[in-house]
Length: 300
Image (cartoon, rainbow, N blue to C red):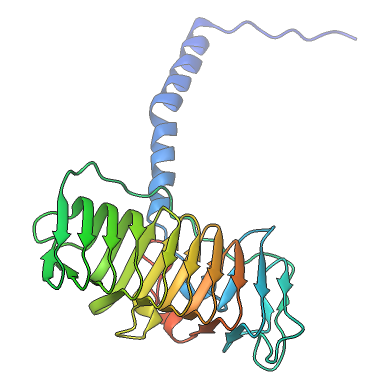
């Protein structure tokens, strides 16, 4: 059998191939990648009701939802939760999901991806003295530090729809009032009996990098009581401490824990969810249709 030998490339063919590769690597591929990145960045986000399908969900394949004594999910869309595992307390006097105990679907639910937290190099510092009401952000929308002293009230200006803050501290019985917009906070430190309220219409979207604790009797969005007006994205853990009340939808990258009598109206998604004694989450299927979680999910 005769072997066929490849004909040597002519000089013209060689030049054409080199030229084609140059065009491909220098112009076509970068343009394609830019187009794909642009398309991804500007893609229509999913509806929030397709993300928060129920009041409690695990967003990881190794996650779980665990109910302790008399803790429960009120108004569930289903008794079957999107979670690899659901644990219940057989000694509870009430069921964890309405008339029945909750059970697991065997797999995780949807997960949101926020990307890296926006940070600031600003040296701007704001301090709200005790018993004083003060408006912040009329000029700057980036702060190195914001501190609200006891009984003080800080109100962010509507001059901006985005704020970037390195550290925000709230003292005992202080109040933070936020207009609709996006708030990127590296460290958020809260104190007992404080509250965060929403100013006007629209949704406040809060991104917090450090572990976040809503302390004893803390109130979030109690003024409106509409969970569609407050969204929380926690890059670490989120703890709802004893007696706290929160009207919001929260997406947590790691652990979410509700302590004794803590209550959330809206919904919570996390890797692991632990509901301690007599805590509860009340799912709001109407509010989730109105929820606008920035670029992560949209209202209907």
